[in-house]
Amino acid sequence: MTTDTEQLRLAADFAPASEADWRKLVDGVLKGAAFEKLVGKTYDGLKIQPIYPRAKEAAPVAGRAPAAAWQIMQRVDHPDPAKANAQALLDLENGATGLTLVFAGSNAARGFGLAATADALGRALDGVHLDAAIAIELQLGEASVSAAALLADDVKQRGVKPGACDIRFGLDPIGDAASRGANAFDAATLAGSAVDLVKQLHGAGFKGPFFAADGRVVHDAGGSEAQELAFVLASALAYLRALEADGIALETAREMIYARLAADTDQFLNLAKFRSLRRLWARIEQACGLAPKPLFISGETAWRMLTRRDPYVNMLRATIAAFAAGLGGANAVTVLPHTAALGLPDAFARRVARNTQLVLLEESNLARVADPAAGAGGIEALTSELCSTAWALFQEIEKAGGVVAALQAGLIQSKVAGVRTARAANIAKRRDVLTGASEFPNLSEAEVAVETVAPVAPPPAAKAVLTFAALAPIRLAEGFEQLRDRSDARLKSKGKRPSIFLANLGSAADFTARATFARSFFEAGGIAAIESQGASDPAALAAAYRASGAAIVCLCSSDKVYAETAVPAAKALQAAGARHIYLAGRGGEQEAALREAGIGSFVFAGGDALKTLEDAYTHLE
Image 1 (cartoon, rainbow, N blue to C red):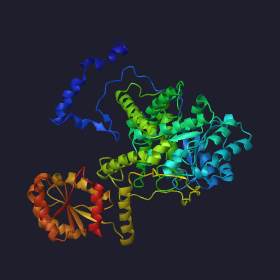
Image 2 (image 1 turned 180 degrees about the vertical axis):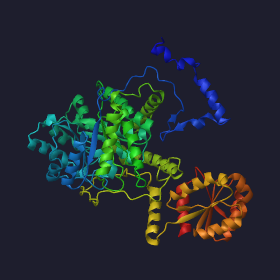
Image 3 (image 1 turned 45 degrees about the vertical axis):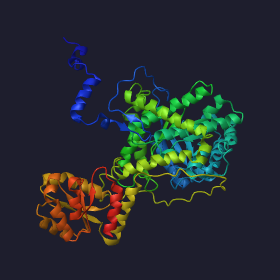
Image 4 (image 1 turned 30 degrees about the horizontal axis):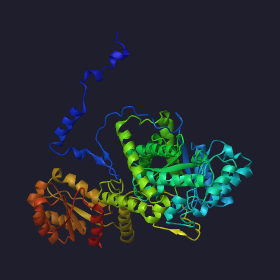
């Protein structure tokens, strides 16, 4: 009788494989192309190899307690406190373990949020048992800082012991100033502007943490992972110094600070980012003469990755982001509902956001293993390289005089702007794919429901004493969405969308691949593609174009057919009245002849799709 061990001999039946063996196979596929073609690169310039060996002697990064789930946080941002309360209670009854109270005017309010008044706060938290292991996190702006003290008063009036509450007060004057480009405090006092309030809250018995070092400011503005980490480190260190300068021992001060990071769809890079922050903060603690303790990290799925078009894809983006944050060791995760870019999310969108985390935790059991990426060669390499790059950027900020001085000098903004520009170029060229927006658009998508609540005006801020260039938030899909908006406006005013005729040359085998590419290309800009059956006779193709009613046309076929038929086809289409003729593919050796025949533009993978689509509207109007 064979044993189980003897039956499981699959690997032993194969000869051991080495990296050299793998390289031989790869070289055969590359057929002379450089191996570097397989090496990716992040916006920080970090190289991502196609394969890594296991990292030897790698230790897990200390984060959450073993097998402890992260907190499932749910945004509370409805301006009507009664409706906000109903949402909060429903979330808590159905699996959320914490509430993120977003106040109007904060850098993540997105036009909504609670008013920073005792009445609004009390009504929003009515029936919420603050001493029942429910986490509360505040997201505040300069005009809503008073909400921290109001919440403390509310706890006192309830007769609840402050020490029994799990409240992160979210004080972040640096992040708020960075996002708005202004603050009522000067550079010397900005970091310490809330220290008196922190001492008051701590003295009342609240455990905190109180200060939030918020990297979302940099991420929302289009920055890189290392830039986000460096900003968090510099902000946290500024708060640590301010607390120490006011007489609070470093051992106590560090426990008054936590971090926020954004999580997006680059799964492995984001997992490494969360791990990196813990290592980087431990290095600062060591430099302060402290034995490292795990930093509390709150993660939120990224604002900039959300699209208004095909918003259901945002569910997938949020799942990947929450997955990465959770496995990266986040202590708390907030999932932005998939309709957040369209308005105030309704009950369905909130439910999906909540259940995204419940499935990851309760069905996939992702929290059961502490730091599951430990030892994985790729993740360990990314973590180490991110640490090195972020530390170098952090040192630049410190050499400039600290985070506030670096903001005043424009150091942080200029670096973020450089990455944002590079990112925008890759999105325009569809190298960074935005499913449903820049690729695979759906011009027939139905409208998605959101709450019928008008955005609220942010509360007035105090007169600015400190000013500099703001790290303003963006969404990556905005360029393509603006074109889709133009298309919608045309549909509304004229009853039909702008269109392009796909002049398919030859047989289906010849044109299908490029016709499919051209349809996705033009419909990403809201220009509806009108298909044709395919023809080899230029006169027949021209007749089909005239019957379509389209103003512009795109030739689609193989290079072989182009060589034989593209020139006469282009001439026929031009004679038929085409305002502008595109060709799906590159011109190659024929480009001069094709242009002379009437081809105005070439559309191909890697070309500037956004610029081409914007130009197309000039031929449609």
